[in-house]
Length: 238
Ligand code: KIV
Image (cartoon, rainbow, N blue to C red; front, side):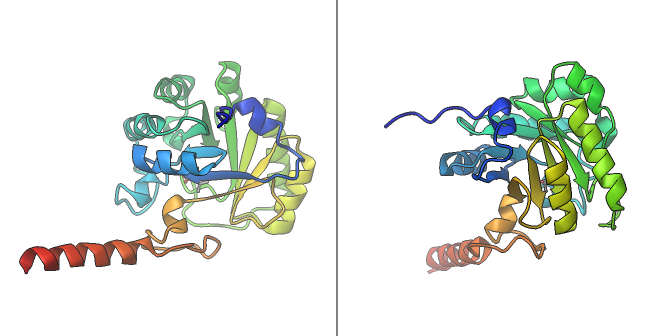
């Protein structure tokens, strides 16, 4: 069988306007990174959702650079083909920290908002932007004015980002942004008009305690795992 080519930043950028939608999923460790890479995802994201999904925090804000480096290294051991992108925590945005994530095995980093983007791209690190709901800086999802979001998206595109995550942006506005910029948009609860979609893998697999409305689980793994564990406990005790 022919070996599938490694996904590059250039290939993701070149996917703009093509019929094939991009797919990004999160992973924070080697087994999940390997599973979703082998399944054929385009981008594996070591998201700062790490904080609430696997570290047990209420939100993403306590996540540190040390956490991100540790989990990026683990995920990198599982990814062979997909592009590996890692989040920089908002409070730690700097050229040096972007380079630390690249040294840990990421091919690109994702940053919420506009802070530091130009400097980091200038330093040679590819950046995926992130606009709309910004969990690191906002308490809860708030309605963004459309003019401001479109301006920010254009500013990020002009700065040289290779793709833009749009989280919880109203679908028609996500469509306007997608049509206004020359790099792919990846929607997270932002409707069907983006160039790709992302969800947290634990939500997709029914492993989360809280389920966003836009991420319908395709399987209830938590229930299946609980039953398997109970069966094991029962059989040992018997
Ligand atoms: O941290 C994360 O998992 C993310 C996605 C939800 C886009 O940023």
